[in-house]
Image (cartoon, rainbow, N blue to C red; front, side, top):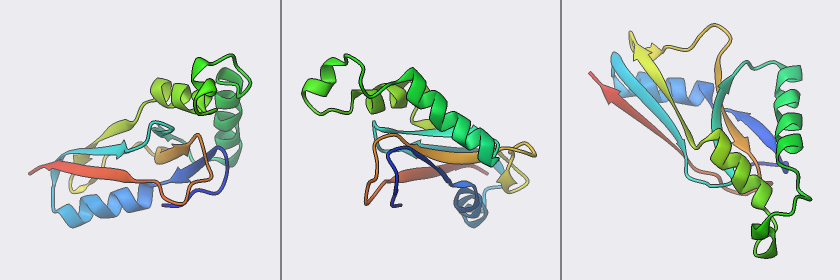
Length: 128
């Protein structure tokens, strides 16, 4: 996928749900994994105000102008730190051939160091 902003949330829910359906797995787990140290995978509500709040909170907790040693090398330490704290993956149960997400839950890729022309996410479904 391509990202367009320094920090942004990309809703992956429909694509992940389609992968589960295509897998034929009726019960098991689905792992959604970011292949990037400056990205994270999260589950939250897809509500515009909340999504902006997530981006603001990440910026507050991991400021670009911090005295991060990695910035001497690559000037994106805040992105690596946020990715490490938020995590590269989530695991969602699969029940009845579908993602077992709550009513207001969606799966997101959180871009922390964009824009990027290509971000890769692995979706692995295991079960019967």
